[in-house]
Image 1 (spheres, rainbow, N blue to C red):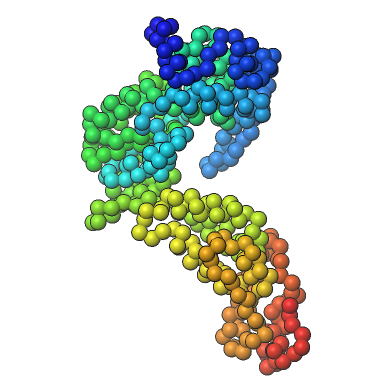
Image 2 (cartoon, rainbow, N blue to C red; image 1 turned 90 degrees about the vertical axis):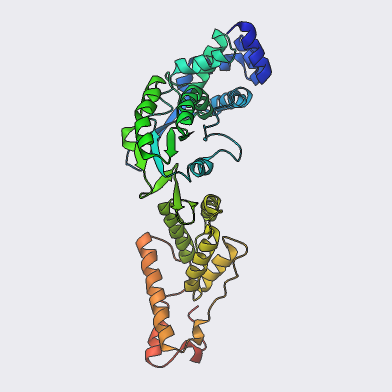
Length: 405
């Protein structure tokens, strides 16, 4: 490709041009000395953190300094986001056609699926590929080198940089195009969500035969398959795509998307903890998790939001004997359309069965708080033992002037 062609490409994409550090400094608003240090001594501007994985190992995250992050955001907004990835790249993109939910839905009406994972995805993208990317869009050797240095760490694409997701999508354009061409000829559906690749069709034999060709293309493009995360899905087992479970109903010829069961179980536990203890410090976090699940499942017959609201109502019934918990609940309702909870006057209890129920509620709550090391916000001493003792002597606080609260 000639320099004139590169120039036309940069003009068509409205990419910023620079051939010296001083010109880049003028574009970014930072000093040329600072940009020189950021590009030549990049490792000094990262902090390495380790995040635990589900399997017990750790994922290394390279967190750039504030200044380096600003430069990377400029590269992302002014350069990388102007380059269109393939139409089968579903991650790190805006729009209703992309995202993990749309990725799962694209494969929801096929019978057989093949799930593949690219090993060490970001670190496997080396500096030479990033350099080639910037050269191919029109930057000269000097500019491409500076941009590559600002976007990579120790010769690799770091996990934690603002530029890494967009660069990975652009670098994978060649991989995506080859796989798209392969799959379209065979009637196979293909999408890639970052390092997660999914292939599906209604022909089991065809999908299995195509696997060896898929693997060869992946090897040719410089990536390595994670054999531990290679899964084949049939109609008889659970089809999970990028964390979303596809549930098919062959009789009705319909499919529903479900959020992970463990994740929903975790939400219920968080709701129970807040309602039972009266501590709503993580209220916004819970609402955010519920909103995420509702987004995944909102097209299903029974919405998740209606089910979770019923669960909140059921849990709240057990705290009506505790005025402090009722007040905390009403002040921190997870949803504004939930009914205001009313406190039950325990002085009016007369029924033997209700006494037993009250005693069980108290003991269960006390045990729960002790087990989880939670503070009790209720103002009582050994409650409701005084009422229980009075019951045995056929007395209640209804016959007295004092109250357990």
